[in-house]
Image (cartoon, rainbow, N blue to C red; front, side, top):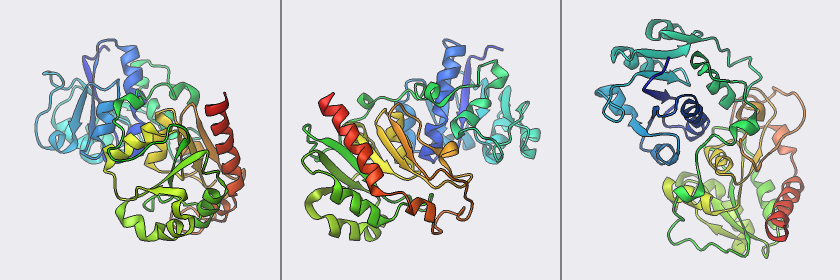
Length: 337
């Protein structure tokens, strides 16, 4: 099997899913030098996909669903369903893509795919990125990779993103983004903990940005009121390309399980992730992967608050002092060697 090109499919509009699927492109390039890699995305995730050094062709999801697509002038030779999506699987079969790799755990893949990987995500101890890589088994690729191995496979670099216009970046300080909300996708650290953390940090050492969407501003206003001029407010002021540019130009980011946290980790930034210990949202499955990624989570098994949006005593128990200690160390490493 030596395909001329391959399409990678995941949840096209989810930043975290896209980033955790990018290593597939690197591994395919290693296995098949000269192969052309296409990646299905949306306008929202385009900037991440096109910045990946291992992806050759961005494929708009709607274009894939509605018209014939080519990869550098050639029809698709194969598609890997990193995440099982019925509408993408059906369309790949309709397009008669010769090689269609899916999981045998989905009935619709039995109807639409012709190569299968046995994969039980629900009970697996593997990280989401490691699970995605399992889908490359039909290519005789080594899929038993550690998280440090995967950290070098994202193909993203800060040089791919422009600094945000109009935002002053202080080169004498550790530039830190605090992204306190998650859009309801994860358990969130209490706002008061973020306030306490900011109050404890030395403003002579840290330039702190508060980020979030326009819709999140009302929820974040108490934080802004409490910390005053200790921070720079960029809530709702940056579109996604500019926000990623800010992440690329910064030194670190503090957040719960969100897309920006995965971006920071993949760019090699200090990514401080605050997590609940319950399956399947725990960091063993969804933690940030990067050379400078750190996770803060209680070392316990707990499933009392599985649903995002419900109170989580475990994440509330993580103290600001623990994050401050890690931040102070990162500052010292940057400026004092």
